Length: 184
Image (cartoon, rainbow, N blue to C red):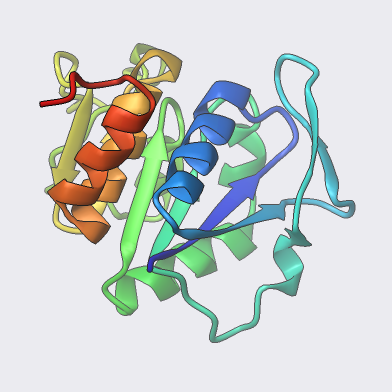
């Protein structure tokens, strides 16, 4: 089953991080949370503190995951400033792995040069820097990049990642199990 690395900076958007983690674990994915910073406890924008599995600095120099996920929120500023995050993105692109970003997190992909010529969406607050946001789309897939608009689109986003990496049948099974889709 798929492996996922979730990068958690101080100020991450809790809904955008925790909902996908839950959905992906229900799908049987191995999800590892990595704190961007010096400690394993990370506090989100709404003052909810979580305990990450590892520090991002503990990810090995050659280690890649099936999906690299970046949630949005005010913590995106920390992600944009991190050379470590940019290097990790480059490594995942080179390995032809999935990269998922939601809300303002596509700004991190933009900074790394990953959105040039791509279709994507993001939170409207990022529109001043991301001029090609597909504002009417909840989730956009282009190549191995999956983007989404914000907290309100998180469930669709998480299920799209399941479908893209493990197939429609598993995504539908998870959706039915949480009453996100009518059972047949």
